[in-house]
Length: 179
Image 1 (cartoon, rainbow, N blue to C red):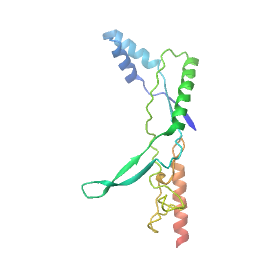
Image 2 (cartoon, helix red, strand yellow; image 1 turned 90 degrees about the vertical axis):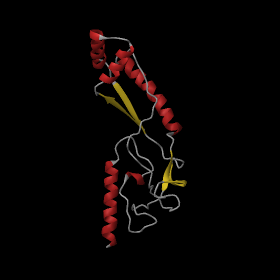
Image 3 (cartoon, rainbow, N blue to C red; image 1 turned 120 degrees about the vertical axis):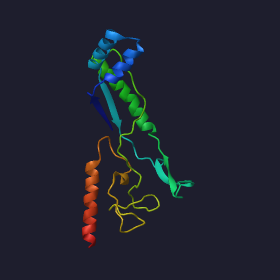
Image 4 (tube, rainbow, N blue to C red; image 1 turned 30 degrees about the vertical axis):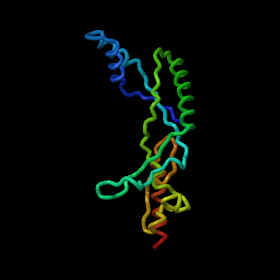
């Protein structure tokens, strides 16, 4: 899955950098910044990250902090699925720019974080491969529940707040029935 996002935020920074790179000064610089700011659109996208067991967070066996606590080791790759999606997105953006009469089209190939942190305390039935069970209870501590997006292997391209709320309600039901 993918979400295209038309961004109407001010493009003044990009317009200014481009105008300065052109060597403009004075009134010409101001005119170019105003023109580019009013005639620039930014489109970005969110690509769905597929679950990948190789993407993981583990405690280091070799590196400890000042208190002797193991530091986290993170292994992460967006994967070929996302790279292919990004290539197709470039084609879509080029077509959109053409339809809008765009004259300068640039692409940023960086993958920015979407701030939907998932997978650090993954849910599953096997304690060897997961941190919490289907009720969000940790396998190691029967009185510890985790209401977090970290229990999900991954999430789609939109905010996962409602899923976290649903998991919280599931925990509440489990605690209520445990009485």
